[in-house]
Length: 326
Image (tube, rainbow, N blue to C red):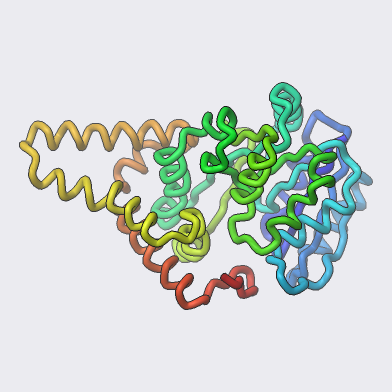
């Protein structure tokens, strides 16, 4: 059996699409546990009504957040205590899954004898503002780390994962109580896969290839707030490493291009365009949009980086009404 575990906080406008997509799965040996994490909207009532239609769905009220924990990590920990499945699938409430996903990921887990499989979801974007921000996630990921290294190398430096989709082998999960070990981490997904690799277990991170999608943010402002929460943490809170990366992908190319002959400048520009096209196609994104918006996305990345450093230094990160301690 697979336990699908959904932490939900103020998701009344998004979670119903996920619940419907789970109901449409051909794989039926499921239990679906939803934990309402102190929501202030109608999330609990909506999920309870849905559970009345399908007895595989069960809804729980989350406990008050204890000291030393971050909200999502504690919600996942509570869900794991309730789950009975051989596999534990933690999935975000704002995602949707395609029919056949469960069969596919279970085959991958068994084939690779994996302790963890994480998928990077296809991102849905409905506005220009979102297109300025959301593609940066795959841009940073795929030009920094070949995902194959996550699987073939036991070095924890080669770590990438998405908290939107995390599938664990339950016996190992319960033995190590994985979420309890990363209870205060902002990027718990990356910390979890690092931890698993440290224990020498197999883990893998893959692109979703259309099997799971998500509209992470619904505006430019939401995107800026979300990415600025995570960007510096993604560089292990190392401001110098973040600056070096910005130099590499933004300032460096501009500086070099200003000294190149025209034909070499055009060659360099072509390489940049081709890299954006390749990353876009791998990510299931619109390549032309990303090429046209590349200069604006890079400016947005710089703004997010500055904001992320400012939030880190001033300890002012908030998310879904909660203050996140650094």
